[in-house]
Length: 261
Length: 267
Image: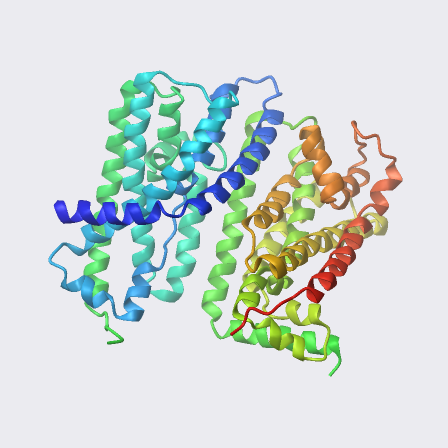
């Protein structure tokens, strides 16, 4: 376990250096949050009772902005770059499990920029009265589910990276996975607002674990006692994806040709 | 070879080079299309849940969505040279363009064609077509003309923003992320009627960046509506898209000013 933690923390400290990018991101997310807030508020003037009340929808919008980088999955092409430069040779020689090594890096890659962005955004939203303190139990449950979301999104990202071994179709696949994830994790519209008939399917799919479920725990809309079910759902999907990744890696690494020297 | 001929030569080269990676281009186009289709599905979901938006129906909002999406896609597809201009300045490649006795703006514009942006245009056109038929707007040439004018105005406005973004590079060397907030943020904003936004926000997108003039105001006469807050006369919507064209011309003027202040970074 120790080498993986070391890799994770080294990458994490490296990424914390990108503070000016985080500041620019803060302004961007603030702008998007404001647009979305005004749109949703105009919709909520209709006197029907949606499954989320107006305070919860407001909080949901700002949590989406705060944790955007966590749930916005994308392949970063790092593995391709290693193949191109020949550095993958070093990776294959390291006396650690390759999948765990890459996963540790991915976790840090998800975690550090998210932390840099979510703290000021949550602070600002709370200050403006757009986000309520949910109580200690809900906050802890939410953080636990966010940790699960980091793991799950790292697995999805890794799958996307691996899929880029098949270069041409991989890039298109990545866009596709990204688009589907954004929608079905609730980043465009809170999942409970989608038609009631869809809710069972949405609950089974892995995507809600990336954003919707942690957010609703943080808002207190899902009671804190349900956290076990949420995290179990995330872990099951993370496990299934990991098995898939292991299979794909075993197949693709066999035919890797190391270039450069 | 004259300037316009040169531009189309550039476009042809870019088209053929991207067609070398045919599958990659097709899949990227498909990816953009599906991303936007899901974005529209979210809007549909909101209408499905809430019914209307301050008296606007889904079809009416879809008309706004279609105008801004098609207009933005047109600008985005041909403005990549300006969008990527920061790299060109940083690498010193701009100096080469300066040596050629042809209009600079056309040379930059022709640098690269954003082929997969076609996904955005196709999706926007489909939403527009659906909105047009479900609103029973028919085939009156005046209405179609106004629609065309609105799309043209939108494209010009976004193109103007890209040119301003590139002009900024003369001083900063790098592109500013805030410009992508303006372009993508504006395209998101214009998908909904301006009347739902707060006054300060509406003022920004009316007077600073005249987005409302190219999407919202021309859509009002198309829908037989009037604006409740600003009380603009109906005829305003018929001419306001021209403000987008004026914005593009003004941007080109700023660009020319920027070129005169260019100092090479190249080595």
